[in-house]
Amino acid sequence: MAEQEKKRLFLGKVISTKMDKTIVVATRSTFKDPRFGKVLHRNKKYKVHDVQGEAREGDVVEFYETAPISKTKYMQLARVVTRSAV
Image 1 (cartoon, rainbow, N blue to C red):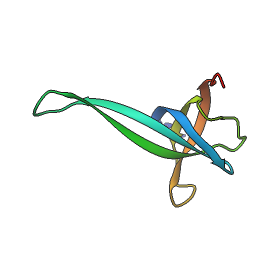
Image 2 (cartoon, rainbow, N blue to C red):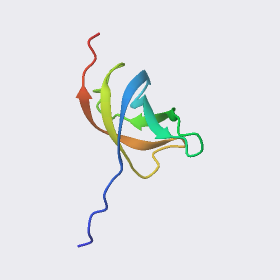
Image 3 (tube, helix red, strand yellow):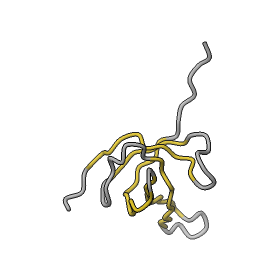
């Protein structure tokens, strides 16, 4: 049996649940500029496959990379970390 490959886990906030079985999640990465040393932030949105529809807007979720599901969707929901208050 082949050794299981480790999946890259991401953490982000759900910003849209308007599609069927798909949520849009925003992640924020922080890094230091190599030239000036200033701390910068970069935002990126991912379309994440949510089969059961358990995530809601404002939730913090954990998701991972998979084989492509559609043209723009290649992430799968792992779990809901925290629920939104609303």
